Image (cartoon, rainbow, N blue to C red; front, side, top):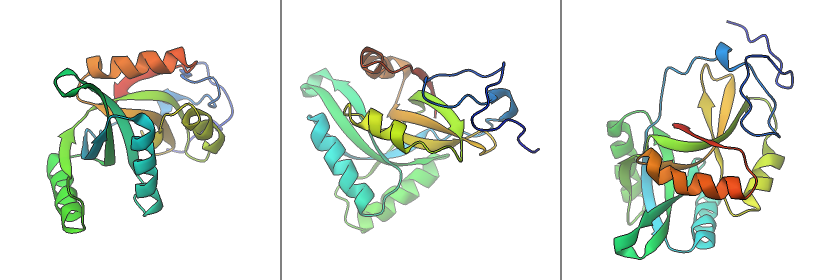
Length: 185
């Protein structure tokens, strides 16, 4: 089915989540797949150090690198986890984790993290660099995932085991002026 809505043309059935993203017709997209698994490679207590580590991994060629906030009272409170990739099945994540360990990662733990914080949905051809830079300037590390029939991408932050764990970061994003919602990955 050919997409009828242009990336920058609003639709009455659209649901804008972030004011800077173009509005697209979400009803034309199908979302038949999910990527609830990822690989946890490091945890750091300082957000800026987690982002620096993630950016080093990106510079080494790992494309799907992101961070996520985890509150772990028994280990000192806030931790910033660094993840690589998103996978449809646990077996796929385990295979990639195994390869990562063979390639020098000390730690590569597959995790089920089906929830994320979505800042918006844009047409796949829409240039998101300025928006990503604005979000990154506030200390967050957003990433994109294909959405629906791959005509669109989700702009998201983090990966969480449950909705309650995502709530803390959602509130921080909203306090920083971002419109967002918790969704499935």
